[in-house]
Length: 148
Image (tube, rainbow, N blue to C red):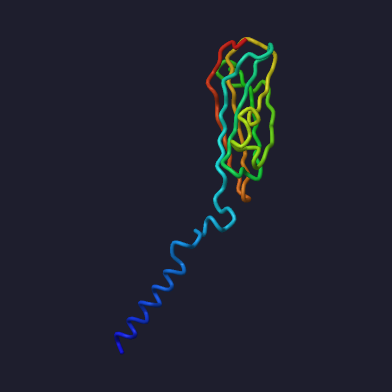
């Protein structure tokens, strides 16, 4: 009788393991996105373009993209050791428009101002909203002296 009870529990354990084993989907993957989409920003050094100083930044998110992405690109000038924003603009995008499924040019935002002497850099700040979570991003380019 004792061997029969042990055999019964071994068979029951085998059935439970088989039903819930390798064929099941991991809980995080089936919960509708408990992990937020990852995004990054890449500021580019200011350049001369059409008689202007232009600051640009590119962004990229993992597929399928976030619920929302706001990127603020700033052109800054060094005034005696203090970085001063000369021009800034915010841009919004979302979902697939933030991923590699669109070209790098379509994921690049830029601001500019008239040529002037000085040392300049690009500062980019971003805010990613996905699954009701918000994450801040930022980056600063290298400096460019007298780009014009």
